[in-house]
Amino acid sequence: MTEPDSTFEELKAMLAAYGHAFSVSALSRFFQRRTITLKKDRARRRAGAAGRPEEAGG
Image (cartoon, rainbow, N blue to C red; front, side, top):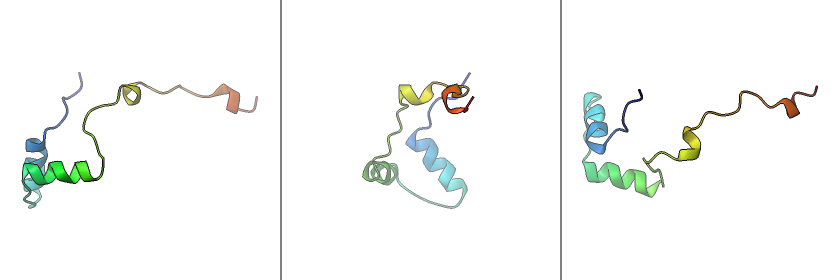
């Protein structure tokens, strides 16, 4: 079973462990300004093809 997605609170706690202090709103703005979404894209969760025989040259 996979772990659930991290929340901003969890990210804030992880960064605090390294000595960095950020508010949840600052973290949210950071991701929004860089158009980084935290929702998983269904297409990206699927496993890719094992290989591409058409490119194998055989």
